[in-house]
Image (cartoon, rainbow, N blue to C red; front, side, top):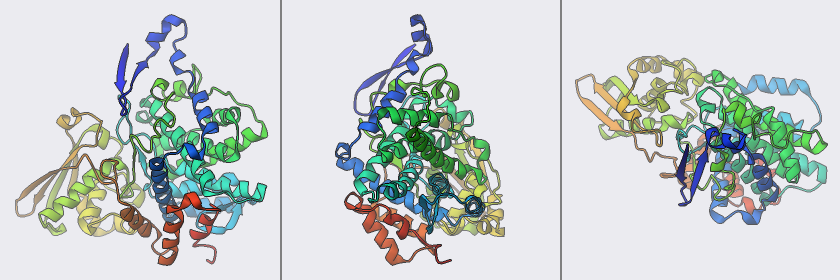
Amino acid sequence: MRHAQTLRDGRKTVNQHPKTTAASGDPYAHLAGLTKAAASFVADLDYADLDGETLRLARRCVLDGLAVALAGTEQPGMKPLGAYVDSLGGTPQARLIGRAASRVPAHLAALWGGTAGHAMDWDDTQLAEGPGRPYGLLMHPTIPPLIAALTMSDLVAAETGRAVDGRRFLTAFAAGFEVGCKVAEAINPDHYMRGFHTSGTIGTFAAAAAAAKMLGLDAAGVAQALGLASSMASGIRAGFGTMTKPMHVGRAAENGVTAALLARHGLSANPEALDGRWGYLAIAGPGGEPALVRDRFGKPHTMASPGVSIKPYPSGVLTHPSMDAMLFLMRENRLAADDIASITLKAGSNVLGPIRFRIATTELEGKFSFAFLLTAIILAGRAGKAEFTDEFVSSRASQDMQRRIETAFDQSIEDMGWDRIRSKIEVTTKDGRHFERWADENYRGSPHNPLSDAELEGKFRDCAEGLIDTDRMQQVFDFVWSLDEAGDVGQIFDLLDWQSEA
């Protein structure tokens, strides 16, 4: 079986499956070459190779990633993680986000920063382009390579006595981002649907690529790092709704840093660990289609096409169109919370499947409960850091409203496909009125309807509220928007520091 796929730039690629290659004697031949392509791309990438649009988007992703990581440092799950990190001690190689006075081993700094970056589920989302890939369900692409590159900047600066500049940092970040996205696109989408958490699994490869680039490893060294990473990449969706889910991303960053450092020290690994019968794609997919991406690393960068969603709300991107539909419906019809008798959200399995909790009682559960996500919009007219707290979720008003909200699988919406996020809100008021609103497929935050730079700065302010003052926020904006010219990326740790004096 062969079918051609038209890519966004007009080229076609042919997807090969085991049946087509079995005649050659190797049913897994189509899984060859991905590791080599990824390693060569990382080793060869120069700052000069990054076009202006990719750099613009990279700076936006960096600002968004720093925002959510800063906000994440005060989340409840960071307290036990911090106690664990502090209990271990070790060589002071890298600083912690939010705690610039603390220096710990590099892998633990990455664990801290990566976990913080996903602690609120507010980090960006990769969009799919391949056939059968569920739109919005690939991975959170920024945090693993961002944290890995930032962590390694501290270690490299200490080892060399020279600060890491913005161009080196952006190149490493872009390399890791691209490797993670392309591997996520290549692997069989059943990887996620069966229960792997892609941001933890594939995020490990993104972090390893970024860390390896920061260390200046050659293609063989990058391949070794990816080989080591393939035996570390893990994370299952059973952890959703608990503190374990953000730890998956923390572990991805930690594993990537560890893999790159072990590769530098000479620990051997299979240099084709993504490929073939026993490679990661075959075992964890199972299978995949490397032909979709093997010759397309950086051509174009995934952050440019098909793009990335920067989240307006701290929950899964699949929920955002519905939340906006609720917001706009309330505004347009001048409805108040007391007017609502019942709400039904109708969608297909791609939207409803990841949502696990009928009624949320904690903030972590709330991220996976449409009843709560719509309740936040209804009660507060927004859903930001202040609403995603245990106190707000468990409040009497929240619990009462959640019980008025139901979800329903709609076969007609399912039949429209998974190429976009589709849903419909139906509201019945206490006085008998009925309202309907379809969610906008070109939802806010998507590449089709992106947040403006001003809106992105507004999100940062929400994340940073109560942690750093407005003057420091502006310093962060100035630093990131001109990151290419920065002489010392390590200043980020000082700009985000809020716990050193505590």
